[in-house]
Length: 408
Image (cartoon, rainbow, N blue to C red; front, side):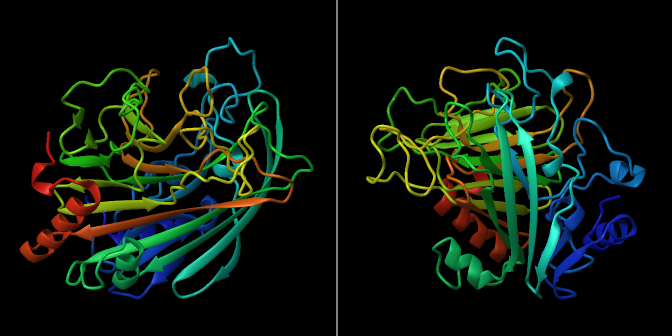
C-alpha cells in the first residue's frame, strides 16, 4: 500500500507523541519530539495526499532499541558529524590503525534515541532543545547544547528564500519547511582542530522510487582543475547505471531507487547551496537549500580561525571528514551528500530510501559559542502541464538542467 499522510499520522500517534503544523486539507508537517524533533513526513495537500517522508513502520512498531542505529525514518532530522576519520563520533576510541567498519559503528544516543524537549509550539513552528556529552574516536570529550526550530513556509516565503519572483510557484501544490539547527559548546575549553571538531548534519529520508534521481549541481567557475568534481567512492566505485556526471550542464545525477547502497559528496570549492531530486513516477520535485558560508577576509592567518567559529584556509572553509577511513587532511570533507540505500557488507539493509543531506562547516567553537545551520526542504507536485512547466523552470534556474533530461 502506498501510504498517505493520514496513514502515517494515525500510525505515529499510536506509538509516540506528535506535533502537526499546518491546517487540515492543506500543506502540513508531522514532527516527533522523541525522535529529536525531526520532521517525520509532510504533505502538500492534506491528509489524503502524498506523504513524502520515509518512515520505518517495522522498527517503530516493535518498540525495541537497536544498538547501532534506530532508523525511525523522517524526511528531515538533526545529526552530528564527523562520521569517519580519526575524529569520528560514530566509532569508539581506538588506535589510528584500527579499521572503521560496520561492526563497530554506533550512532550517538543524543541523535538517535534521546528525546528533545519541546520549548515552544505555534501554528506554523516548533522549537526543541537538548543537552548531551560525547567522546570522539581520538578520546576528546564534548559538552553539547542543541536547539532546533522547524517552521512551515508558504509559497511566497519559499520564493523569497530561493530569490525567485513572488508568483514563480503560483498554482504548484507544495509543502516547505525550514529548520534552524544550533550547536553550542557547553564545555570550558575551545574546540581544537588537532583534537577534533564537530559539524551539524541535516539529513532527509525520502520515499524511494524506481524513477527517482538525485540532482546535484556543482561549481565549475574559479575552481582548481585538481579539485575532484564529486566524491562517489564511499562504498565502492559506481557505474554509469548509478552515477552520471554531466560536465556540460555541470550537474551530477545519482539513482534514488533504494536498491543499491551508494553515496556522493561535494567539497566546499565545488558545492552550490542547492541539491534536489526528481521522482518521475510520482511527478514530485524535491529541493533542498542550505546555509553555505562564503570565504571571509577576516580570519587569523596563523590558525585560520574566524570570529564565527569557522576555520578556513587559502582556498576553502574547513569541513569534517565523513569517509570511513583516516585521510591526510581531516578538514577537506564534503559539504553536501546524496545517499541511496541498499544492502551493506553484512547483507542487511537499513531501510530503503534516499537522502538529501547538508552539513555545517567544522566548528571551532569557544566556550558558550554557538553556530546555526539552516536547511530548507521543498516538495513540489508537478502533476499538471502548468505545474510541470513552473517546476521545470525552477530546476533549470537552480540546478542547471531540465527535468526532461533527468533519467537513467
